[in-house]
Every structure is written in structure tokens, then in C-alpha cells.
Length: 307
Image 1 (tube, rainbow, N blue to C red):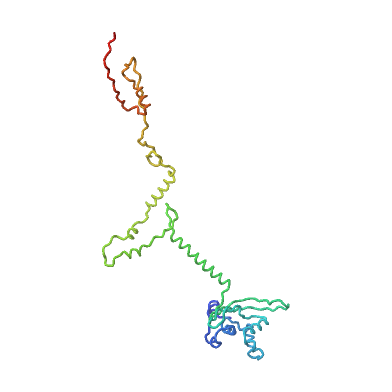
Image 2: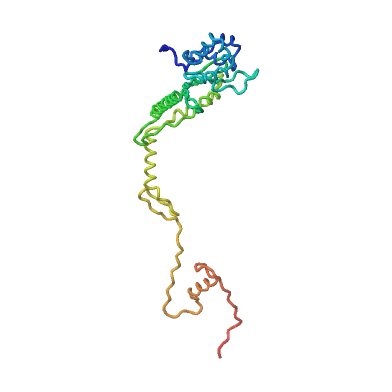
């Protein structure tokens, strides 16, 4: 049983340059033996049993010669074993070591012929260069994601409550972000202390919202909601909201002139009737109020004395 003070295996990185130099690098026939020297290796596995038997049995020396022969001998046994699950795609000179995937699994043999063995996978390991890592389990990944998500959500509520304000006029409101003008102010400042006009930032600092401004905004909104449907017509509207009156535009309709009454008695023939003049003026398309055009009088050659 491991020490409780030691870190978990999925949080450590292991490498041993001495063993790597003795094996002349990591290749197909040395990757399992290099992995056997790491703390991830279980000494009770079938890999350790086969190596110990080959050390004292000359007939089994050929099993340790190649990885294919070693894994073929492991497939004939039941129990815990370490095999190469995936090897690099290219393993040539100058190609690098790539990434090796070693799988820890338990094999159970089947007595029925032609039936594959029952395999239970426990863990996967990555060999990257000379470093070996243990792959995290699905439960560890989900727990880490949930922990980071809950931590982020827990920071949202204090941040949202800190920028929230409440007032009787507006209710719950949030602070609007203000543009930072410190960089612009620094660029306009003079190094020699030359007198300059007041900065824009000072004017911005002096202007601030007050209680009367909030009250005025509330009153304006109430007036709009109450009398917003009343619109001005062609005639000007006077008065205050709720007591509007229509005033005159200054234009008056034309009133026809009064009709002159007919005089009593006889009327001289030389005098023309005003009604006749108005009728003639209307026929000619002239206004009734226009002065009459003077008429030319014909001269008479002489008077004839009746006999």
C-alpha cells in the first residue's frame, strides 16, 4: 500500500535517463522494459513473472528477444498484464520517439475454442520521449470540469450583486461601464508645464447623476404615458397638459358684403343700381368691392326743340 503523502499517480511525471541510456533509447523492443522501471508498474503482473522465469530458464530467453514474442507469450496466460496498445505511426531514424500507449488490463481465458478472451481495461499510460504519464480517468475529467464550472458560477453572483443599485425612482439598475480617458489625458499633458485648457476628464468627473435628475426622468415618463397620445393639430394648442385649448390661426373666412336695401319711390334713370353693378362685376370675374370703372359720356351735337 502506497504512502498517503505521495501524490496520485495521474499527477506525476516519471523518467530515468540511466535506464534509457542502458537500453540505447526507446524502441519497439525496449518500451515495455523501460516502463517496468516506473512506479506505474505492478511487480505482481504477468510481465514481471515472465521476465523472472526467463532469467533462470534458458529455454525462455527467446521470449525476451522481441516485443511480438513477449506479447504472444502473455496472451497465453491469464491475469494482469501490460501491453502496447498503440505505437507511433512512423519509427524511422530521425523521426523521433513519438507517443507510445501502454495499456494495463486483466485477461481471462475462455475454455471454448474460437472465443476471444475476456479483457478488462484498468488504465492507459503515455510514453512521450523519455517521460511517462498516466492518462486520467473519465470520472477525474468530469469532476475537474464540474469543479471549474461551479467555481466560475460561484463568482458570477457576487460580481453581479456588486454592480447592482436600487432607487425608488428606477428600481434595480446596473452600473454602466465608463470609458477610460486616462491614456488620452496623458498624451495631451505637457512635460514642461505649459498652461493648457482644463482636461475633459475633469468635466466628466464633475457631472454626476443626482436625485433631482432621477425625479425629473420619472416625471417626464409619467407625463408621456398619460398625455403621449395628444398631438398638435394645425391650430396651435395652448394651456398645460390636461387643459389644452385650440387657438385661432389668424386666418378669417371671407364674409360677403351686406346687401343694400331697395329705396322707396322712384329712382332716376341716370343713377345705376348697385345690384346691377355687382352683377356685372361678377360676370366679368371682378370682385364686388372693387371701384366701378368710369364711363365715357358721349357728346351731343345740340338740343332739338320739340315743335
